[in-house]
Image (cartoon, rainbow over all chains, first blue to last red; front, top):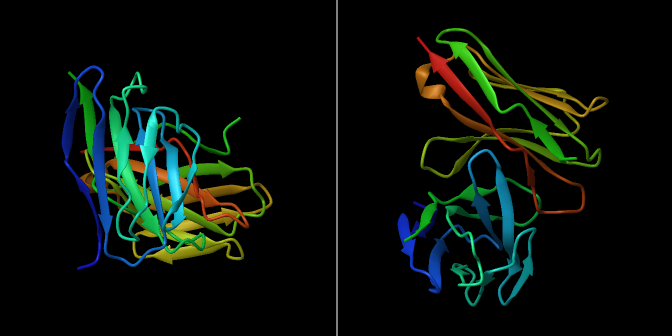
Length: 112
Length: 111
């Protein structure tokens, strides 16, 4: 079955540590996205990518980095510069033509 | 102000109809969506409507679009406890592939 997979489900970060969240899709989608979700604040766009080896900052990119070396993969690194990283992170993909998004099941990141 | 606005909470009795409302600002939006999020999970597309339509019905779901007022609604008939979730309205502005999401409406269904 085609779908989008995020891992891990739960992740803990120590002070000063970088952590990487994985996102893989086998839907042959061109576009991929990372969103951050905080309670009562909806979804905020971190980064997005329309094609391999190209990505753009979203509304809250500071303290985050991404790569898009393969069409199927779009990992997100939460760097030590992100001072308030505790949130639910959602990865999504689409055909890139303004059509619906397919979401992964999310990663809950917490700070130790 | 926000591009897409929704009320944050809605409480209904099991068996009643639920109506979740949304307003948006971009008149060039071509697609308007409703997504459902259950606790601890990602979003799933519930239904969508093209901007040239006024209404779309899919089993218990009815979507109404008023382009003049930039108002979108989702009606759930015979609401069940399994419908309890957060519902997000989203628009994709014309010429863009980046959707804008509302903050989500938490639907609480009680017996």
